[in-house]
Length: 264
Ligand code: NDP
Image 1 (cartoon, rainbow, N blue to C red):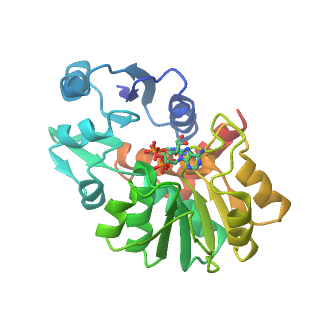
Image 2 (image 1 turned 120 degrees about the vertical axis):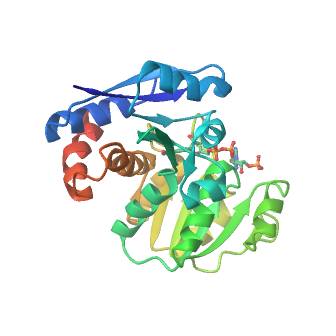
């Protein structure tokens, strides 16, 4: 019997997750099949999951909070950020996980040792990364274009800055979680501030994938080791696959099977 998996979201047509997971199912000879499923109302997510007989799903924008509510059991980190991107049915219960930030961290560790990080941007992705990186002992600071979204980070005890008066103090990793460069040629910070931050950095990371952002172009020009959002996508997928297949394979084995999707 084949186990059925999917990515739930709105929109989902662009998602690369089916390609990534089906490739790994085939290479590892796991009896799984992964599709995409458009979910218009997040409140129906649990019923849709159970009535269609899925074994596991990934959840993308805008339903991660609904997925958190749909789970019977939520792992600690997903509960902290109230966002679930992986649901797995096991023994009649829905287990919820967040593999985005752990995936990001897995990719970051491959670059080298990181003790300090500067996160540019203060949206949902920045929140998850800031909490997770701090839980792994990394000293995180946040810089954002406007002050509004920084309130949450300040309450959580992060050192925060807006662009005004910001001086980079030599962070190991500079991380772009803003949407600057997603559809335009914008930099995530004014050029003088970014240049100063990159001048002392050891690594540069962008969570955007599908195109090379001006920020990563700059990092490349400076010959800084870097990765983009496709590596994060891959790594979160590896951890999700590990949950889907209930830890049957080593993470390295899954990575070997899945990584070629980046070239497809
Ligand atoms: P949000 O909408 O929650 O936050 C966007 C942030 O970007 C805000 O801090 C905003 O600042 C800032 N921003 C927007 N435009 C600019 C600009 N031109 N210059 C400087 N700052 C800007 O976004 P998310 O956190 O949900 O997503 C952020 C990015 O992460 C997206 O590009 C998304 O595609 C990517 N992503 C990638 C994933 C992956 O697997 N690779 C997973 C999830 C997300 P302000 O507060 O001032 O408005």
